[in-house]
Each structure stands twice: as structure tokens, then as C-alpha cells.
Length: 144
Image 1 (tube, rainbow, N blue to C red):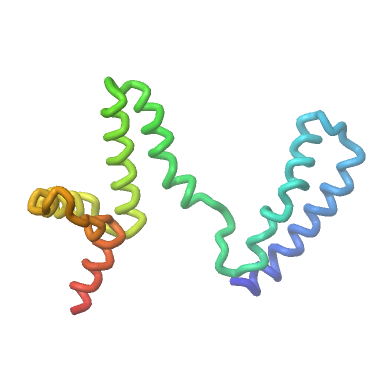
Image 2: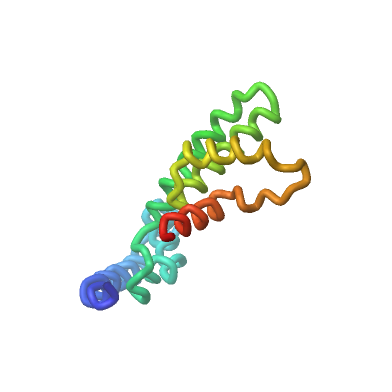
């Protein structure tokens, strides 16, 4: 991947950077194009970082896709009847997204947690019930 990025992306980035540098003195800085050029030049280090590492993602679409439900949920939270209801919704969103990030099927995880947690003492350590620990334990039990 690194070799391909060096071969194909670096020349494109160099040509784009040259074009930005040529346009800068020709465009009013406060115009929409001037602002776009200024922003791109100021963010160049971040824009071009992916070519230095073959494993770095070209974009952040995975993260954008993962946070979209939170943004939608935040808007929905405006219509929660109580602060406690909004907090409960946020916790459920967080658990579900963490399950997905860990490769855990959310329904199976919630069934496990809701079955296991009532059997524990109120002050018991429940860190093993967190999605990433549940995922590790599930993977270990499948491997054995």
C-alpha cells in the first residue's frame, strides 16, 4: 500500500500543492476560494499524512459513520422527557456502538449482561461485563 501511495498519490499531492501555491497570490484571501485555499494549506500536514504510512486510512469515513448515530441521538435527546431519560439513551447508544466496535453482537451482549448483573453483589466488580472484555472472553471460549 505504501508503494502505491508513493507512486500514485504523492505526484497528485505535489501537483495540488503547487496549484495551491500558485493560486494563493491570485485570489482574495477573504473570498470563498481564498478561504478554502488558506484552510487547505494550513491543514496540509494532516491532508498528506496518509502517504507516509501505508496502513493509515485515506479518509475518516469509518469514524464519521460511527459517530453519526450519536449526532442523531443527540438531536433526539432534545425530546427526552427528563435528563435521566436522555442520559439513559446516551448510555445505550454508547454500549451498542462499543459492541459493534468490538465485534460483539449487541443483542447477545445485552442478554448476557442483563442475565449476569442481577446475580452480582451491588458492590461487585463488573468490569468483565464491559463489551471489550466480553469480546475477549468470547474469543477465548471459541478458541478453546
